[in-house]
Amino acid sequence: MFVYLQKQQQLTLTKQLPDMNLTKIQKNKLVAICEEILKDKKLTFRSKYSLYSIIVCIIHKLKTGCQWRCLFIDNDVVKRPFSWQLVYYYFTLWQKNGILELLMEKVRSLFCSKATIKALYVDGTHTPCKRKGDKTGYQGRKKAMTTNMLVLCQENGLPLACSDPIAGNHNDLYQVDYHITTMIRSLKKGGIMIAKGTFINADKGFDCIKLRKKIFRMNLIPNIMENKRNRRASKRGTKRFFDDKHYQLRYVNERLFAWIDSFRTLAIRHEKKSVNHLPFCILYALLFL
Figure 1: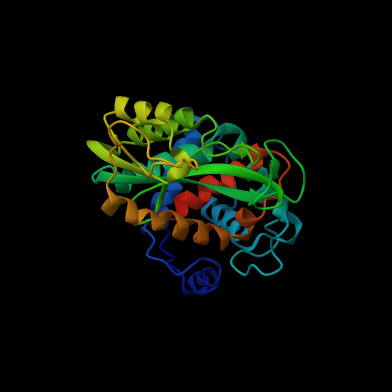
Figure 2: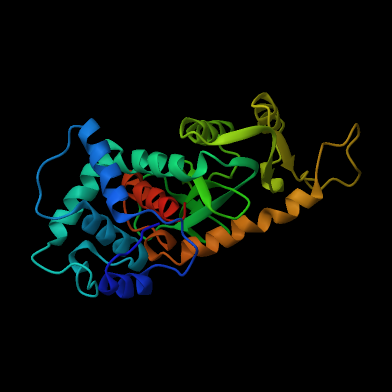
């Protein structure tokens, strides 16, 4: 997402961030977007440190999973007296006022507004929680306390939106109609064109009549594999619509979850409050737009 102008910063950041074709946005443009959002929220004040350096430090925390107090042990981009308290202050300030959500909408509208999406892929991912907190539950497959989250991505596997954290003891169908609606509304609010007849691909864990009707009402096509639910005989009546060619591309969800596991802050949740875990997920989606 970023264009690193200084060679010294480029060498250090490429070791921390994955080697992918990220959408490039200039450093000055990113800072201008942040200042515009902070001005609307009336949170601006003069600081001798740049907002870009603060964002880089938060990305370092997202990638390495280090503690806030150990933020500058292996980070050579910004050095002392740039303290970790300053970075943590900005992170909590942006988390309470929804700055990262607005930043994602602004950047997403810059690069995705002209493109028309023809297919969307949705799936859930469980994150183990080492410390008990809100919106956590025991998940038998992981054999641990986990937090579930639905992620909506496009054909190339880049994330577009994510739902609020859900307790791990719930399956993917828990309040799925509400989460799908909010994610699609956030895309339309950001100026992303979703054509009529766009496929929403999901596995058989999302096979639900209520969800299918909800997707049809949004002028979209649910391409969900039917769950046989251990039936001995085939179900009577007309078969539901299913396009196997579009469904075969659903592996992009699994590839996306493999990328998520490379970010140690997202691989294991250490935050007790889900409101502190969600901004890291939004920042991850922002990096790959």
